[in-house]
Every structure is written in C-alpha cells, then in structure tokens.
Image (cartoon, rainbow over all chains, first blue to last red):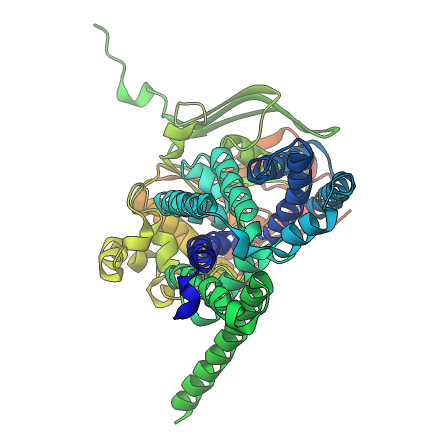
Length: 276
Length: 268
C-alpha cells in the first residue's frame, strides 16, 4: 500500500503498535484500582512539563514532560498521605493547577497555538525515530515488569492489606505502579494528546471486560484491543484525512460498543439455549 | 540436669501484646492493651463499635504504626517472615466489578510466589487446590469472579486462600458481617472444624455475642483496654459486658433447638 512508503507513516504506526498494548495491559490494573482519574491528572500535568521544557530551551520536551508528571504524581501521593482531603479533590487541584501553569508558561512563548494543539490533541505523524525507539523500550520494559510482577500486582489490586500479609512489599509496588503509569501516559500523549490519552488506558480493559470470563482473558483481550485499535486508528486516519488521536479514540469506542453487543448477543443466545 | 515436668512448661504463646498504645488523630484508640493468647485456642475479641478491635487487629498484622508497646506473633515481631505463618481473612474485598479475577485465579495467587498464576494450566491449579476446595466446598464457584460472590461464599474463598499457606495462626476480621443467619451458623461450624483439623490458633474479631459464646474457647472484651478476659461463660455475664460495652448487655441462655445459648443486647 502506497501510504506505508512514507517514513512518517511507518514511524506513526510503529509508535501506535508499541504503545497500544502497553496501555491496554496497564489499563486492566488502572481500572481495577479505580485510578482512571489519576491517569487523567498525570496527563494534564504533562502540559505544564511541556511548557516548562520549551521555556527552558529543550527542543524535545519529552524528558521535562515525564519529570513534571512524576512530580505531580508524587505530590498527589504526598497530599493524600499528609491531608484529610479526598483523593478526587487532590486530583482536581493538581489537574487544574498544572493546566493553568502550562497555559501561562506557553503563553509567554512564540508559536503558542501550535505547541498547545500538538500536545492537547496529539501529533502522531510528527514523531521521529527517537520517539519510535523510546516507545519500543518503554513498551518492552513496562510489559516485562508487569508480567514479572503479575502475582503481586493482582494481589495488590484485590486487597492491599491481604497483599501485605501475603508478604508483598505494598508501598514499593504501589510506587512502581504509579511510576509505570505516569511514564506510559506521558509517552502516549504524542499519540493521542492530553485530552484523549486516558481513552487508551481505560477503554481496552472495559471492552475486554464484556468479552472475558476471567482475568487472564481480560488481560489478553485488553492487550490485543490496545494493539489493534491504536494501529487501526493510525491506519484509518491517513486515508480518511482525519487526525490520528481522535481516530484512535473513536476506533476504541467502536470496539467497546461492538464488544458490548457481542456479549449481549452471547448471553441472550445462552439463555435461549437453556430455555430449550 | 534438672528436668521440668511437661505439665509445668507453659504453652507457647500465639500472640503477646504488651502495653499497646495507639492514637488515631486526636483519639487514643488503644490505651495500654495487654494480651496473652496461648496457642491452639479459638479466641474471640469482642467490643462495641470504636472500641479498637480493628485497630488492634491491624497492629497484629503490622499494618498500623504503634506509639508505645510491643506486639509479638508466634514469638516474633510482626514482619515478613512471621506473616508467612499467618492467615488473615479481611471483612470484605472492596473489588470493582470490572475486575474479573476468578476464584481459581485468586487461589492460584497463593500457590507459587515466583511463577505467575497467569501461566498456570487449570488442571494443574485444580490438582493443587483439590484438598482445600473439598474442605471449604468452593469447587462449584471456581470459575466465578470473586467480585460477584455472596458474603458467605467470599468468606469461604478467603479462608481457603489463607489455608493454602498452612498457617499456624488465623486472624478473622468480623467474618460474618454481611452473612445471613443460617450462613453465620455454618460459618462458625466451619471455623470449629478447621481449628480442630489444622490445630490452628484462631482469633475472631466479632460483634456476634451468641456465636462467640458457642464457638470461642477464650474471650477478650475490649474497649480501649482489655476490660475482661476468660472463658465465654466467665466473660459473657452482664457485669463484664457492661464494663466493655458501657450499656446493659445480657447474654441469656434459653434452650431451643439444640439448647444453644444466645446473647442479646439492650441499652439500659
């Protein structure tokens, strides 16, 4: 197919294929631990990271973006431990504070609109080979570490105290999980943008939930849905002449409703068979 | 060398708590708790809401920092090594229904510390679970998600999970909360039979006086401090319970069905 001859298309597709399954896999535990809003906050914090990075003269603000997101994730944990504030309140505070800081700093830079659009809505077709290798390295390391810690992570998602009594270092694993999630979300912003990045973490496990009968099936399906929807979204966006990020999210939403329909048809068919 | 007659050797202690103080916020929840639980007993920890039952349990499990005092489980302070010898049954799992961990997968988490449950074959898992599945009667819901189990079924699964590690001490936090009365009855029967068969020390945090009366071998009444302790017959009298609950609580022992005593509470 002619469109794959272009290097920017190849790079976009590779980044999508590396990040999609990583988000899908991590998403199973993010949704189980009710941390969707956490990933949204971390994503919005990245805007301030990008702004500060550009302001300090970084050509590629990926590193300051990840660092600032990690600072905000740390601040979230600290405020939660040190105050009686509800988690939602802490997240809303940091989310709006980061966006406001990002907008103020970006407003002082030239090309304000262009930077804002690129990070708010994603710009998958502008990724370079460095982004491709970063996505590959992140994907391989995060997925390997998740599979190596699957027993502990599953236990942690089931009951923290029970995990502690089972000899799992709960605090250390919690920090490790938050680190993975923050890096994953920050890197995926190039693919989907701040506004939509949570969809790649939350929708694959939700769609997989309708079809799966146990956690193993949910993990496998969520990973595959992440892979296919992000790859498919990029592949569709070019011929349709639509932006990459929203196309991936719409593909995910489509997969979600299709899986819901399949699950309904399957259960109706089963109850029909039982009645006969 | 002098020999000590066997009957003079004190029985080993499952739990020792010395002068335990815990303050949560501005409230002194535990104010000098002392406990000595001999091994092999079914111990009930009773007390009104806010008496510090759950806080004491969390201290035993090493989940709650203590301001003053000392806790020892099976002769050692609560740490990772001693936790391997302890089974803990929480009150409930606040699981999201979107997390569809099946009962089989949950139990498989306990089978191997290194090899992930993800790679286990069902047949292999079931073979290793066979004994505990039969004992607890959990075979029929192995494929069901644990988030969808009833209170009683979940308690059985949680006990099965604990027993897989062959614990010496089993700690249960309000195990019958959310379980209906017939369920409660069979649950305590199950605890008694597990205690007998596995020769465990069982510690139950409970508000259910009648069941405690029937099934515990030793009772501690807690209200910030241990108000009284002793055999159920000794502790479950109006005077002792009033000390713990601060209200008039009368265990009455009428004989219906199989002549089991019951307790009731009335504010006086």
